[in-house]
Image (cartoon, rainbow over all chains, first blue to last red; front, top):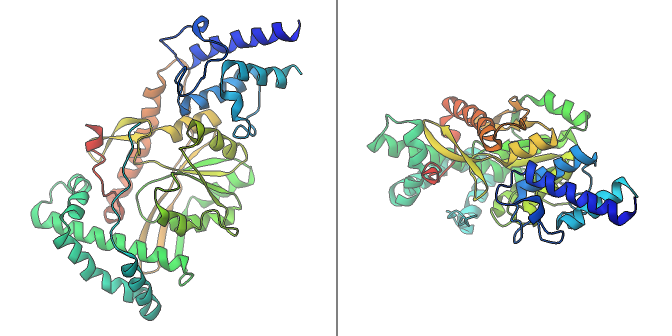
Length: 91
Length: 298
């Protein structure tokens, strides 16, 4: 599987997980754009949703919570989150 | 999130200087002695100060009204004044307090195991003084608070100074500082979070001293996610030069996936509210919440 296909797969999985684990009732995975902001404007997630995303990464991708503060750019969009997951799990 | 205005500060630089000078000349007891007339002045002439104490007093002592309620407010002012003087004395290095800590062995075990934990603080006693007792644990303590919220706290615990291992995580930073908190816990550090006032943070309704309040739940949410314990910090002044600190109440929040998250968090916050309420039964004049936290729940 090439990188683009794998990334697309991760993005789709992240969208499903977000909607499910953050209990986002007013949005479906299909409606989430790859480059829409997760926090503030955009999906409107709050700081405690960030905790859930960290847990989601641990549970589903076995990613350790280290230097999250330094790498907070990865939490900006589904795209940046998928890039991070790909880099840590596939590269 | 609504912006909470900073609390009105009473006392000015000259007054603080005067108390400090008195402390240097006559020791703690000399400074305490002046407190009684000063607090009486505030109790008589500063109606807003007395009013701010009434919400707590009327719930902790529902049988007291009129003069007895006013007298309790006065005693509360004196009690807080002593705590403030102690804090200044400690910063100045003028005194060392006997501090009996219940639950310290548990914290040493956490520290030895590199287990980060959340220290849940309240407006009870003098938690800033307790921070010095944590130095022996050899872990960095991060205070989750707005840096501008209370400069006195920064001075009291010597935040960010070279010799101090106390740092501030601001909830104003991106994602409410949550990532920094998770990092700190992951590194085995201590994160102190205020438990009994939301300051605009997400909260849940719980019963506290017989009425409903909204207490923040972020400490429990983060702890459940980071698989770390919440240590409830309670402290009180028990004599001229002695403090009693209780850190024996340790909660390990867990959230079940199939149940409503907020409902479960409310249960954990209720456990904390019960612990704090029980503590105030024995230490009623050590609770310095001069704000109607119950009204915020209406």
